[in-house]
Image 1 (cartoon, one colour):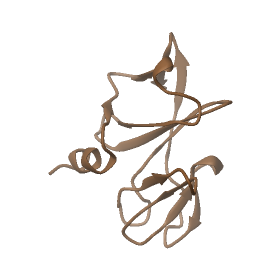
Image 2 (image 1 turned 90 degrees about the vertical axis):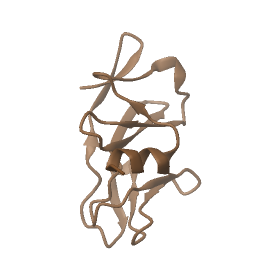
Image 3 (image 1 turned 135 degrees about the vertical axis):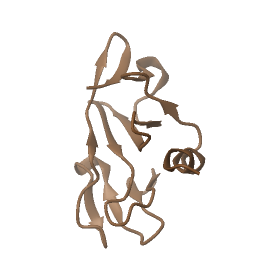
Image 4 (image 1 turned 30 degrees about the vertical axis):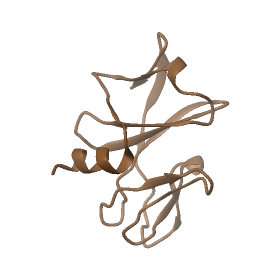
Length: 117
């Protein structure tokens, strides 16, 4: 199974960004997240807050596990070694063994869509 296939099965429903569109603005509520895939197949997660949108690639920077978002803790956590990342602080590492933050995915709102930039 490909990394994209594994990510899709772990994250549930995903959307393939095509070519730059991720999701219609009216389909994601404030406080919600939206899983999607980048053009290279890497899994990513979009966040919507009161002030806008941001996204991260969700592959752990330690050994490549797929992180999962836990809304109650407001953390992305890798199940392999329990590395955790704070998506509200630029993907910063909260607990190791990871030492690098999650890679950001640049997004914007254009013509009623959240898009990759």
